[in-house]
Image 1 (tube, helix red, strand yellow):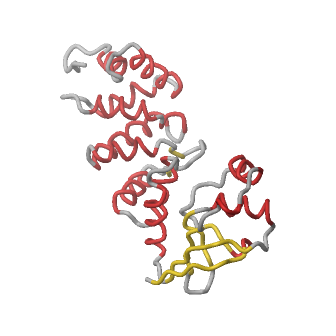
Image 2 (tube, one colour):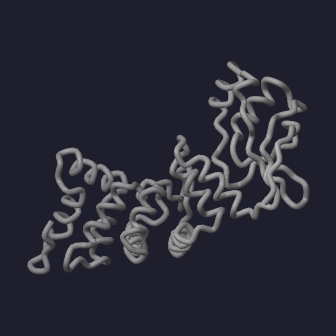
Image 3 (cartoon, rainbow, N blue to C red):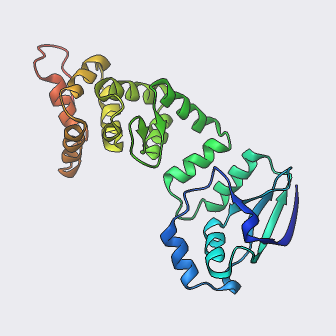
Length: 242
């Protein structure tokens, strides 16, 4: 891999798919107090076709376009010969200690073809779901929760999504992190029937289910307490112990 420091016109710098969403308010703040001396070097990948993609510094580039114009030459640290997956990995490495959202980090992992992230995406697709940074039908925003549940086992994540999807379908509010963890904790109890749990959930709205889980958390009770209580209602045997 070859690296070279050079000036590149702001208009020629492109944004790759693994980047987080450019925040207009952040760009405006930088542009209003723009200091060329404090700009630093923009980390760039030069691809085989000669195009330049920003690996680190997209907000600084956007602010420079506002403050200096699109033809301004910006100092860049240009990497040659990077595979796309290595670009995404470099982005994540450079931004690991910065305020990059969980979604931004997870998306970068997907773009670099990191196995765990790809497996999570596969499990989501099994239920017709996808990860997203905005709420919409069939979209899951709580990527941090998906990651943590996957670390408990791929089958744990698969079972949780099956239960929630069977109960609520594509409703985005149902894929709240607290509710996902409460379902996982309930499934971990000896004797839990996943189909019964999904039917119990289906008797509530997603908003009600989330509210009950959060109520348990707020009073210091295990977050699955109310789910277990509802699950046990009407049973003579096979009761779950919260």
